[in-house]
Length: 110
Image (cartoon, rainbow, N blue to C red; front, side, top):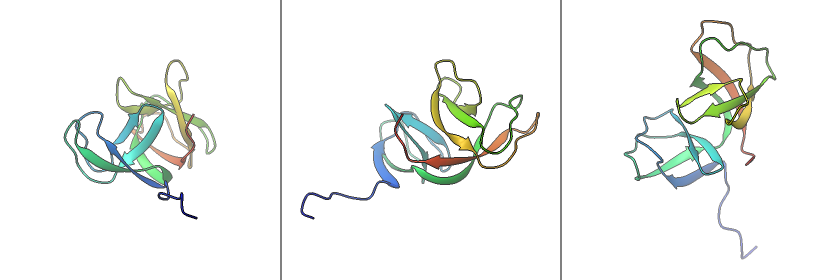
């Protein structure tokens, strides 16, 4: 089809802040995980689909399937809705004290 541009599992964006490879980032309503390091405002590709281990609030807990949100102020996942952006669901249980959450990103813009 002549109007197709690209698949969207990996998308090129401008980094909203300095990013290390594997950092989560929110660009408007688009959430993804940086595939490489990038300076603030530099082009970077982000993965929008898949299962990733991402920094998460240590006191949050949940079973697989619990919704997770991006806390853009603290640059981490949380189970707290508030003003945070829904980005996916836990792909594995997370216990209190763990600082990493295994999250399924489905690529949906919310």
